[in-house]
Length: 255
Image (tube, rainbow, N blue to C red):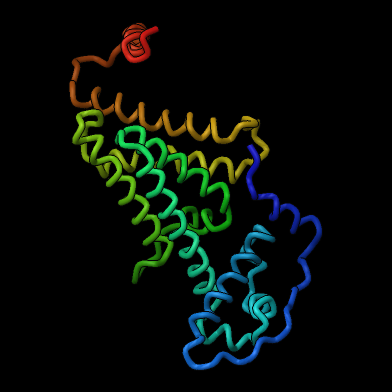
């Protein structure tokens, strides 16, 4: 499985790339500040994608790429952290659109959930730097919520909302938010593992692999919910599981 994480190793092997600049742009006229802000964000996003490492994202480099002075960038972003947060949130909004479209692509709620999980994982692998910064950025910080915490919370909410129809249909059992936590742990674990260890023997067909992970999370959640809702004095044996899975496959697939 190939991801776009190669920029980091490329930057490490060849040293820091020279700051690319574009011709200076004329001073923004009244009302054009929003346009300049978007240009700054686009330049910052391009620098992140090219290098694969946020350390290369300096306000000076972004200013040079945008064709403005460094103080002009400071007028829109207080510091580098604020700029990186804005870039990541911009990408995160695109992720939300992709996942919502995937969820709406199928009338069946369980298959819809599967499509949404695949869209989430694919997006994370296509934007590894931004995903790592938002979803793997370190422990929570005190005080006001930070963008990465808000994004992760929104992500959990999206998954819980997609799970609710499956609970209503009787397929998944339990609290939608708790089911969402387990499902998100599975799909996030997939993305994080591929980003952190691209040299693992990943399959050549990434879409098929992501679909298998999505099915694993969905079917596992369904089976666990039913097991937890029907308490037994002792856990099922391996033989009991094997027999149940054979019966399940025959009934569901007719083979």
